[in-house]
Image (cartoon, rainbow over all chains, first blue to last red; front, side, top):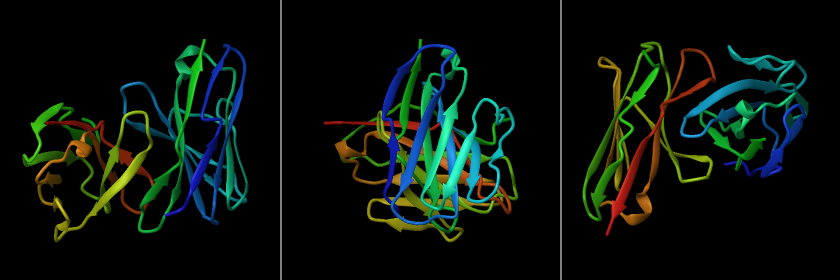
Amino acid sequence: SAVISQKPSRDICQRGTSLTIQCQVDSQVTMMFWYRQQPGQSLTLIATANQGSEATYESGFVIDKFPISRPNLTFSTLTVSNMSPEDSSIYLCSVDGGFNEQFFGPGTRLTVL
Amino acid sequence: RKEVEQDPGPFNVPEGATVAFNCTYSNSASQSFFWYRQDCRKEPKLLMSVYSSGNEDGRFTAQLNRASQYISLLIRDSKLSDSATYLCVVTAYNTDKLIFGTGTRLQVFP
C-alpha cells in the first residue's frame, strides 16, 4: 500500500481564518479523496480530487468552503475556509489502491476556537 | 434509513472469546465491501475485503449475503490488540465512493 503523509498533523485556529492541509503520497495515484470525521462520528466524503480536473464535491460540501488543489499525481491540498467551531474535525486524505480499496493518511486534527 | 448500519457496541469480551459483528447496507447495487479497523485517534486501516464466497484471514472471517444485504465479521480467539472500532464499508454501483458505517467498538479485556 502507498505511504501517505499529511501536514499539519494538528492545528488550533481562530474562527474566520483558513487552513490548508497537505497530502503527499509516495507513488503516483489517479484518485485522491478528502474525508471529514467529526467527533464520535464515522467518515464523510468531502470530495474526490482528480489530477487535471476540478474536484468533485459531495452533497453538502462546496468549493468556496473547501477548495481543493491537485497539481500532480502525488500531491493534493484541502483548504478549510472561513472556519467556524463546527469545522472542528479530523480531516483525512486517502488514495485509491485498486479494487476500490482505499488507504488513508494519518489525518489532520483541527480545532477551531 | 442509513446507507450502512452497524451496532455501535461497545462489545466487551474477554481474551480468547469469539465475537461477531454485523452490518446491513441499503443499496442492493453495492459492488465492493470491506471491513476497516480504526484505533483510537488513528486513521482507518483496511482489515479485509469481503467477497461473495466469504474469506478468511487468520483469526478473521468475513461473509457477505447479497440477498439479505448483510455483511459479517467474525473474530476468533480475541486478543487485547484487537480492541478498536471496526468500520463496515461499501461502495455504490459503478463508483469509487466509499460509504462508511458508524463503526462497532470492540474492547477485549484480560
